[in-house]
Image 1 (spheres, one colour):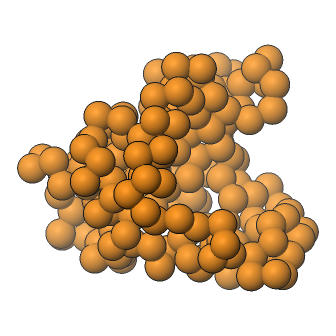
Image 2 (cartoon, rainbow, N blue to C red; image 1 turned 135 degrees about the vertical axis):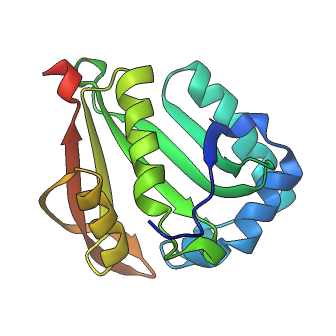
Length: 179
C-alpha cells in the first residue's frame, strides 16, 4: 500500500449530498468515458439526482448497493457498487468500483476491494463475488488477484464500447464462511 493511504469508509451513496456525488463523477468522468459510448453517459446534475434516488430504491429492493468511499473529513474519493446477479438462490454479486483520479496508483484499489467484498459477504450474505475488467486493464486485474480473487476466464465480445465488442476478464471469490 502507498504511504499516502488514508483511512476511508464506505457509506451508502444516498447519504451523500448531491453536490458531493456530482463533483466526484464530473471530476472523474474520464474513467467512465473510457468504458461507455458517450451517448450512454450523462453527468448532469439531474442525472446525479437520479443516481442518488436509484441508490435508495435498489438498496430497498436488495438489487444493488451503492456506496461512496469517503475519507475521515467526508471527502468523496471513490464509489463502489455491489449488484445482485442471477437468481436469489445462487447468492452471487458483482462488484465494481472507481477511485478518484488523484489517488490512482497510491494503494487504494486492494483495500477498497477488500472492504467491499467483506461487506458483500458478511453484511449481505453473498456466497460469491465476481468482477470483470477489460482485458487490457491490468491494474484492476492485479488488484483482484491481490484481494484473493481467482481468474475464471475471458468473456469474449462481452460489451460494446465505442461501437466495438470488447473482451473482458472474469474474476471470482467465494465466501469462505459459507462453504
